[in-house]
Image (cartoon, rainbow, N blue to C red; front, side, top):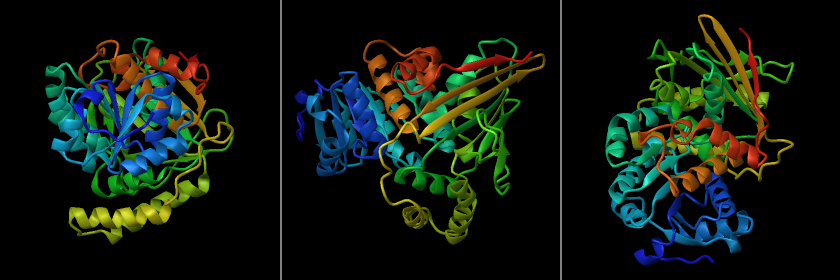
Length: 385
């Protein structure tokens, strides 16, 4: 049953809020919450848009216990909405621009927070500004719970079960194209933020004009094209891991033509927005993003939308390689978010405050969830020395 609601009594029966539920990823989060039989509030700036998305794009939504809510994007309005709930799953990006209000509202309402970000600067900001506050409240602050980061992190954690490894070389690839929101985030992040890798536990900036990298991807003969992709979440998460000193991540889509166009699009956007103030730059970048991707991608097809997460882990006297072959990266994201909610409704996270998905829930537990829904194969783990 779906209805617009405002009273707090109804909210107490819906322990999870999906903010940005009408977007491509938000719909998938709702779909998997239904699979877990978790009541939820589907929230966004337009109740009509959210309701239409639920009815048109969430299979079986008529059997889900959910409410649709229209909410203003302000700390006060979001705090009112979140009060009485336990977990907020945020899909509204770019997160560096729109995330602060959601995080502040979660802290005020006493809710755990997760999001699907790939913005490295947002993670660094969250850790520095809110990590201790969430930890003191016993709440989880877990940004970047998504395929492009968490599945690769699972592979890295499997490698690190072998002692003596301190260096992670991570590659993340998927089939298909970014969503409208992802395209916008990529451009905004490229124009406003630096990308870092981890070297001897210090952030080091990627060379911004290095262009495309050529990578050897397991399972294929053809070399793939890759980019630092904003630096990704992994260097930030593993900076807090005493086993790890060095982390480099490269990623991309299997579509070479699309990858070849990304540096030119980003360079043109940077040049066109040079010297603009923040609001004007965002508007210009959003317009550019719309010209690149302005239609919602089709529902994923596992025969087309494949994923590969490969991690070479090394140390002075050891080498381990882990590959996780999967499919439907956005579905993986939706499931990871729903699993996080299911876990948090039953028990406290393994680590409160700022934590990755694996640090909060366990890498083998997250792998089990992905395996149980048929989204990844059994990892291929090879010890090389």
